[in-house]
Length: 444
Image (cartoon, rainbow, N blue to C red; front, side, top):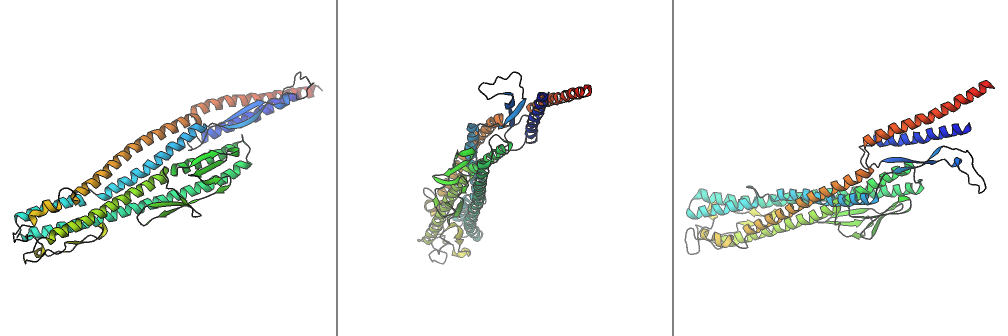
């Protein structure tokens, strides 16, 4: 009779654990990073004999919970981390390259179109060199180009600052994940595999690894009890309970540098969000350098062209512009009588007629601007295509993992019904055993 109580009690205990696992699955069906739980039961050890010469005749011990399992596939988990890494990089680059294109501003208020308008105004003035209103318009258009250089420089500087701010946020996220992983490793070392608490720690570990790898191209392996081991280009970031955080430096030219918190220099990240931000910072720095080069050329070319002409008063043309970078380009002349429209031989529009050959054509600032815009547009287009591909790969990897680790509410509902029936049956065994004992006691 005692066997009935043991069997019934073991059944209710085991199925209660199984129902708890199903309930947790249902409750966390929408929880990101949660892996489905299941319970493995085995025949109770009390129903078997370990003595070499003992023969069991009718010894039933019921069931026992062997372990709480976590549905996961290491290969699929690694695929999600890798594709997430690539997606993080391309997304960061796409966002900031798009902002850079906006900053370059190839619209009617940007350097390129204002410069074209300036040349058109010079051509109009060549047809009527004594027209004061046209002279004022020319000087205004020169000033507007100078202001456009300044504005573009300021906008690109703002993009560089934005990249640096986001990069620091990414580094902060990386450091939090590194510290959290060290704490999780410490807990995993003391946890018992196959328990619910152990599985929760593994969920937390994988969530932090996903966050870390989406930001930085780290190398990940696993040690005792599933402890995470994280390295970056040979530098250990997480080893057991030891954590090495990283630090970001923003250079004066807008580029970024990475080092450990202890000052050891690290190579620039090649992937992940931080890798994308490093790449974007380098690209924006190149654009700023190209813009400064064009601005310097614009100042030099305009001043040289003006110097070869003469004013109405017969003096050589004074410098039209000053500045050594896009941010410092400034128009110097506002008096229309100071515009050197004449050639050295006294032709009223002689200097104006040399605009096309001197300021435009091969190697001109105008062509340099067009090349700058085209280069950036091509890079942005390829980045968009890369981001689309990375998004598709990431979605596929996540879907494949969810097929293994995710929670299907229909399946859980069916399992819950089955387990409830088994639990009720086990409880019925206890009731039958109790009724039988009560009947026997009444007979006695």
